Length: 260
Image 1 (spheres, helix red, strand yellow):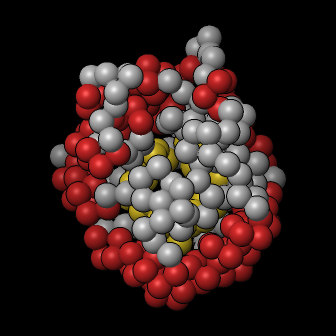
Image 2 (tube, rainbow, N blue to C red; image 1 turned 90 degrees about the vertical axis):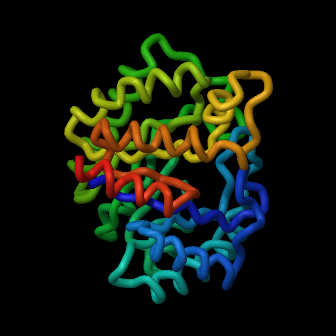
């Protein structure tokens, strides 16, 4: 059955839930996600939405580490805590605090995962969040993303990483059309043999699909239906982890898909 990773952003500027979860409220929301069916709670302290401004390392540590520590103590044995970061120091501090998975949009932290015996999610992205949408240029988006992820996963495994997932990076340096092509060809990535993680929850392209307009996508709060449809499609294609803001409905869907 596809596992669900709940998104817990402890940021003021994330595109959907920025500013909603801080401190004790964030820990409580993480515990609620586990009750709703999350196998992972993914704590992020830096927004990676398009055109986001980078966060100072010390600020990211301040946001993330206390929540990871308290959440790991609360849900230990029932679910795993992951940290969504591209900074080595933040990754190491979060692992010290009880995280067991690195969700790495930079696909660069495999040595940390290998050294610490942590799981590692390697995501495809071009450039930085601040400029990635200007880099959405591909001759063959499926082939290029697949080749990049296979190369990173193979290298990580050769250097001692034992638990690896690959993520095509929906919305990261990809247009709506490219996102849909990647979804259409998920089986090709799954067939590589590396477990696939996928995050499309409430992203802009789901709003474009919902509204039928590239220029006027549905707002993030109106993207549940298309997000859930994309998640169910991914489950049916054999994706191992779906990352979502909406844990309960996604976990319920995963339970059904896992039985048919």
